[in-house]
Image 1 (tube, rainbow, N blue to C red):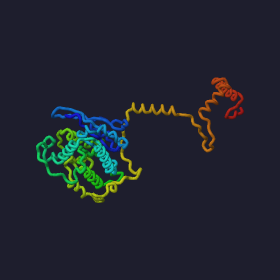
Image 2: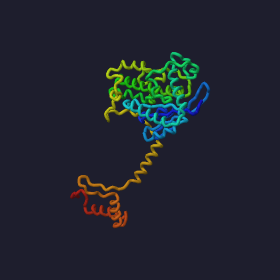
Image 3: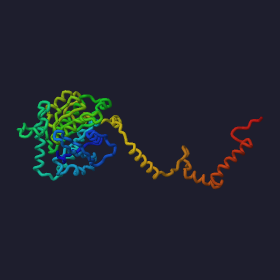
Image 4: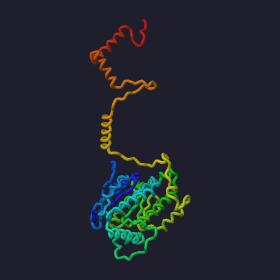
Length: 383
């Protein structure tokens, strides 16, 4: 199995791609702050050949100033061996089209600046086109579950006009994360089924343009996470994969590259009652007003040692910057004595009375004199 394969993860911070990658690895997501270009890997094992390898995972932070780091993950050497995984969050569906256009533009500009041999780029584009054309549903033909079966087969019919109009020569997969947030959208923003159908048909049409596959996932509810890992191994290493497309469950949509078409997408148009398929996406799925919608971010635990270390650092910073401040009396504006001035007054009293012992002696002497002469707060009753 080749060891030079990699996945480049792109997407906004709200997509929580780190939790998804941790779910694919079968471990707990780290609470450490991530920035820049993050590296990880997935252990891939082929049971039939009894071979193992590591699939590199590069995650780029959603900051335009950090786009220059792409050269370390995607360059002339890694171009033929990299799969693009674009993450979108169901918790903010109004950002889908903007995020998709932004990242595809970033990717297009970056690839355009690479010095790649023209013949190699042509081969990559032709390979991607052939994979789409030769797709066969495993349910109808269970023997054709691996790309290895495609050798020496005749070239199928040409692609539809809407398919692969933007061919980068790289595998692209769109992953919609946090699909469990659909319930929150229904409850908080009154989303109906036609809203989710409109979102699905829009993103499916966009996936046709880039020849991308589509999967809705939820690391919280373990929706399509295992399926996503199996499909990645299938597309990258050619390992067997026998799962058909699924569009019945709204929160568990899975569409492999090559299955979809304009005709299949048009089935969703029948359920659009409040909008039309060609309506502007951001007009139908509009961003709610600030403070009206608060997505469920979940509860994330923090390691106690990390918490204590951060608390110690904050206490040290407070001790270094802590200075006595002059306070004023409420309503008068007159300055009160600070702790520093109070300490000076106390030192003067101690010096005058002969130290702390002298102050205590004066106090008890005064108390005894008051009791001897009948002084005090209460009057002495006559016998």
